Image 1 (tube, rainbow, N blue to C red):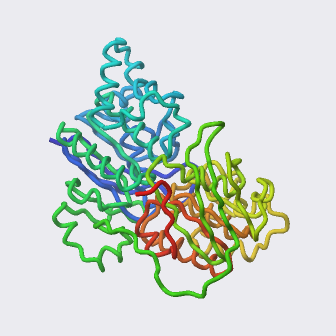
Image 2 (cartoon, helix red, strand yellow):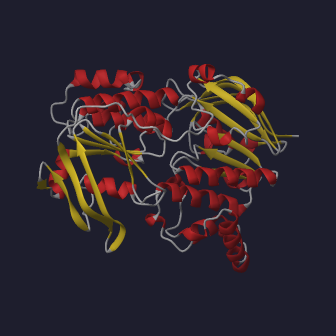
Image 3 (spheres, rainbow, N blue to C red):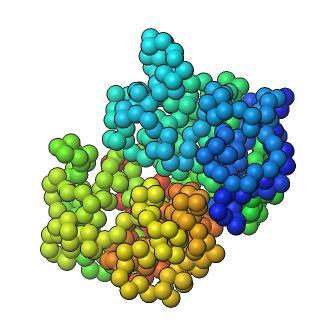
Length: 464
């Protein structure tokens, strides 16, 4: 039985020349797990927005074709009607939160349906137990890490018990343990007979879950594989398509012997946190120019907080950040360091990609701007508004800004989040080029492929 049927679907976003999808014909049976993959900007997210009704309700543009779900015309339904049967977990979970506490967020959809209070309390408790997130109950949303937020976003959908789950890059901010949990979540809902559509770059955790895999290119479906056909692809074929590894491998840092350089940056007995709450204490780290240090650790251990402190964006509770032997104030650190945030939407301000790359920079080197945009594959998008681009494309804009501003310490918080294999390799090479220019690079990441390809040191926060 066909659960979802897309027939001759084409969609172009309002105000864009490229982007969207064209000539999409896609049938998904009830209970299937379907994965949409392909390079950044290929149209994966657009298909998810079509199925969950965000197109054309929120994202305007030229739409052709029709979508049938459970035998009914999807475009004839109101968004609230679609939401009764379809639940979505977005790439950035913050965009779907309505409450400031975790319990309220999980209960939100149930409250909207007018379910009685006692049943809601029981359902929230059951959801937390099923998904192993009881440790996240009774917490402020603002105190959660990116990975923890993603778990709560999934829990809020699971609590409403939809027939269809739409997941857009659900693993992008998760550590390896949390990705294993996510795979278990998907297995749970598959056993319940739910239909699952996942747009994803990171594929290793899905190889035994996906029933069908669709490869997209320039807004069209180019290939379709069953699970067994997909796993028969050679590494050469996979890499030619720009797909991430089908197997998880522990990161292997570069062991090439290099000339030992003088320590320039020192983190000495640092304690970090918010207000009086200590997130992590007694952190010690040294770095020399040219170092590319992967900062790893479980979700919620304080990696992003640590790097914000190094950048002067947050005051340390104790200890010091030292440069060439001198303790640095927050003001000095801000002048010395630049951070590419995990959620790049917080640092996109301009009305075009080109303008964004030199926003706030006096007398920018426009030749350098053009060269950087071309290196990152963004030049053809230079006149587009940043907010119309995919998550991976936005990430590359932030990387471009870090290259154009001339700071001594560059911090990247999950720079490969939402990136396909080729885009990840481009970012890796650019980070290595920055290190060759005597920059100190700190990279918060769960991406073992990025670490192995890029970093010469590994710093684990919070132990094993």
